Length: 289
Image (cartoon, rainbow, N blue to C red; front, top):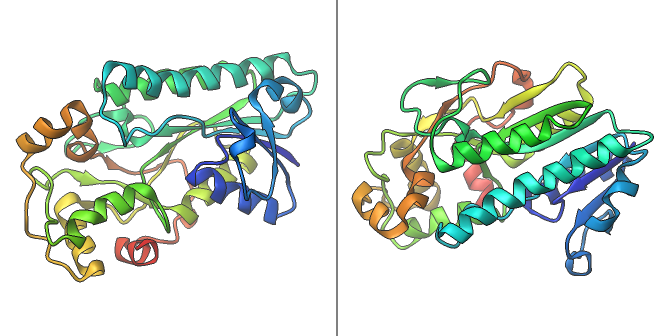
């Protein structure tokens, strides 16, 4: 089957593309700068060719979007975070509508942050959207995906843990410097998913015709942030006792501190439990670090 992967040069994209190509699928990666994409086992095409590439494909996967980490969330950065997700999804939905031979499914990334600061409330696929910036991004992102007149699945992804994951390397840095510990109260939940399990979720979203709408890619091995900090410490053989107060994180990061201080007690009621084979954070972190 021919599968289009927008944003296939990113961390999750590379893992998914490798899995699909390994199983014999024809994969085309859409990139805004195809000349810079190297070492992918798939054909790379410019975004300008989206309409012609989508026509006749069996599935389209959209992983495109600038990182929510990195630079501080200035007004311009927040606009880029939103536009890079919504605009690309709009374009793919438009290409699907225009196709003479449309794909069977559009699978779009989304975030477990859709629920905002949910506290101890159990968050499943039927939970309403929150009111934070990231929740508003997820809402607009998912709405854009539903414009495609085909089966569509939105994969609400938790923190991805795996080898060379940039976010995990950044989170590990304070521990390596003997300065790791709980963030804020440490009571917030710490949703995560192993990269290999996430690939299985995307493969299921492509293949399982019964899946529709949002699905939660989150490990059943859920724990609170203070307990996740202890796991980081054990894996790195470092202490995990130095707290980072919420006010200090807010002063340093502003609204971006939501990434560290807001956690979701997220579960899935739609996905088969067998997709999640890595349920112990220490196992996933040991491989990642």
